[in-house]
Image 1 (cartoon, each protein chain N blue to C red):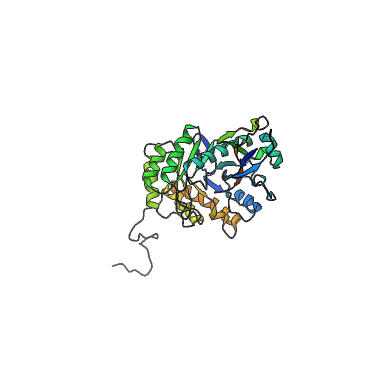
Image 2: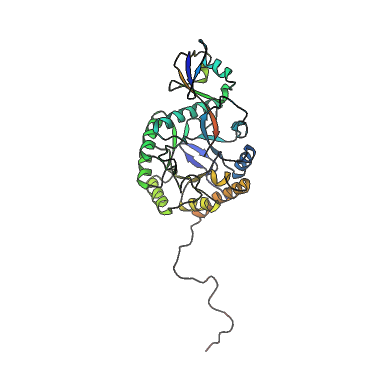
Length: 273
Length: 66
């Protein structure tokens, strides 16, 4: 069964599953889990280099930059200025590595440390500046349909509504809002990419997001935090494919009452008049 | 001279280039990016950029994240 590539800002991405590289118990497990997801795009964070005690291994030794497109995020930024500076540093890092993710950014401007919900004002501000500097911006947001529209209007190359808080494993808490977002962002623009990002806990969450009509799903903790990340990564790969296909297969409607699957006539025991 | 590196003030000798600083810190210039006084300093300019008193740098790298 053919799965069309996802198109964002003229770039074609083979897998609709985007996977984060944080929180794995070991870099080996991370490497194996990423491979099992079949993903092409992996997110990375930009952080100060350790200046002392550099005994840790480098993540770049475990993510093949020829195989994966690295998408830097602005995680941990609580204001637009930090996010903008982080995005610029991410672009510089990837330009030096000659990775196709150079110039792309997963924009997160957070509003609150406990909920990690996005700050809509800071997000919009940072988005406008980054677009003016030529970035391709995939913008993390809440499932607020009004904000989603504002971000698209301001030039976001993809809007990424959260299913539930980052790392919370609650899946898509409000499928109605996700449906509204999809409808409003794709009105007259059916190929505009909407990616559900954050809160995925297990494979069915991914399938549900795709069946709602999302173009892709981004997850990290759901795989990295699983007891068997490689097994869960494989499950997520199947989930993104099954959700994509089910969405396009034209499901049966939901009905209040039953409709038998087996014929009504010819059952034994009945007597004719 | 005093320069700030990753949020910490450090005492450094004069005439230190960015490339020299990275060498002192045992950092691989191919795996880092440098912001000098709020501007991105391209890698090609590391050797030719001499640091001045009160300069502020962020030296960053890629790490795991979602």
